Image 1 (cartoon, one colour):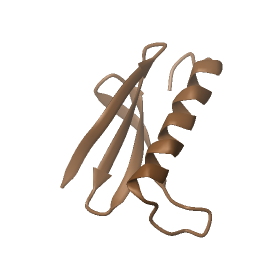
Image 2 (cartoon, helix red, strand yellow):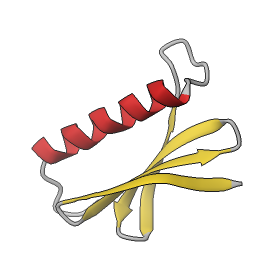
Image 3 (spheres, one colour):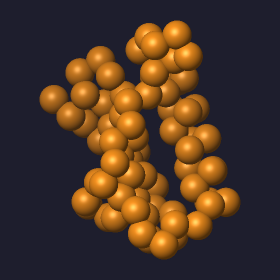
Image 4 (cartoon, helix red, strand yellow):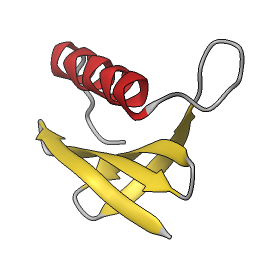
Length: 72
């Protein structure tokens, strides 16, 4: 079951931190309409802890603030 843990809107684009069973994902796109989904994994390909996945999500949010997207 998918559960949205956190949603951040940057420059009109929405980034959501989602948990689906044991996996964590980042959903990118316009508000309410994800255009891209990225699975969060460790460098070795394993499922990260929630703290590690959350840290990667916050790093992606910070990167989005410095980059400019016309439309995802």
